[in-house]
Amino acid sequence: MKFLIVTLFFANNFNTLTNDNNYIYNNSEINGVTDIFYSNPDNDLLFVDFANIEETVTEVILSQNGNDVMIEDVVDLEQDIIYELELSLFSSGTYQIELILENNNIIKNRIVIQ
Image (cartoon, helix red, strand yellow):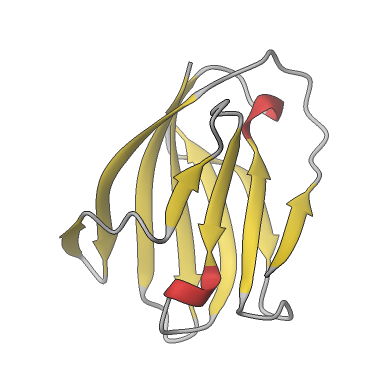
């Protein structure tokens, strides 16, 4: 299993994650897709398991209040990796993570960093 550490440069405090467990896929809600998004025991890292997504993930977007705070082009990454996002780099609040897929479908998840 491969890991990718996303390094971002933002000044923030230590945060934790509350995961919604509700996902949007192509405008339809999917419940309980916990095999895609999960966090570590300290809740300071968000993991996205690309291998559990049938389509190629081309972009990861993190937004807050409708404003993109991170856009990562991942089309060239192998699709059997665990994508790792360090949440401690972001301030407290509610965010939306979007996985843009190769056919322009979108998987969305709301996360709350405390």
